[in-house]
Amino acid sequence: KLDQKLAATNSMENALKNADCILAVTPAQTLRAVLADAGPHVPKGVPIVLCAKGIERETGRLMSEIASEMLPENPVAALSGPSFASDLARGLPTAVTVAAKNAGLAMTLAEQLSAPRLRCYSTDDLTGVEIGGALKNVLAIAAGATHGAGLGASASSRAQSLARCPLVSIVAPSAVPHAPAPRTAMVHGVLMPWLPVCPRRRVGPMPDPAASAGAGRNRGCRPLQDLLPTVPDRPRRSSRHCHRTGAGAGR
Image (cartoon, rainbow, N blue to C red):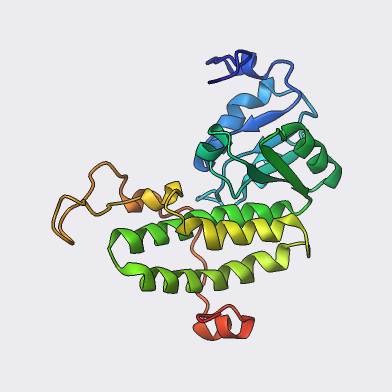
């Protein structure tokens, strides 16, 4: 049941008036447009907490870069899992990470957003947290594809081992050692996509249990190609690179 203090409005001005913290929960690819509409009503200096995970298709920019461009007078932070809203709504213990370039801001926001069943950690590695959350979406689609195609646990495990290599090579250079951000990014990208509850696993056609093997499809899912361009194309790394980094199959 929602708190009685919550109120819904279709007025951007009313929603942002007197705000001391703003959570931007709009989808990644619409963030720029929403912030453009919100800009005139956003109080100066109020932190913007980004809850969407992704990279802008047209520019390859992170959500924090877009927010800083659109609202240059407001500090930017990101709220990231690994977590599932359904668990939190059921009152199950959940932990998330609040990231901001200003460590003091991240810590303050983490304290403000924490609750008895929600623990917020803080880090100043904003880039590492954002990259981990964005790459997780792509890897989750791959996980759902192997499951939906009925390829079995072996194929899913192999896909997971291959996914670990680029994630480590991309996230590790940006991460602060021993900070929550590297752990957040790795759990996001390596563990979460393979959990059945992960929403990105349900992208694209899935097998219909009532139909014969390989023939039935669930028509209620969005086409896979609608969500594929989450991040820009990047050069592929060879399997030799995986072995050199110690992230290849069998590890």
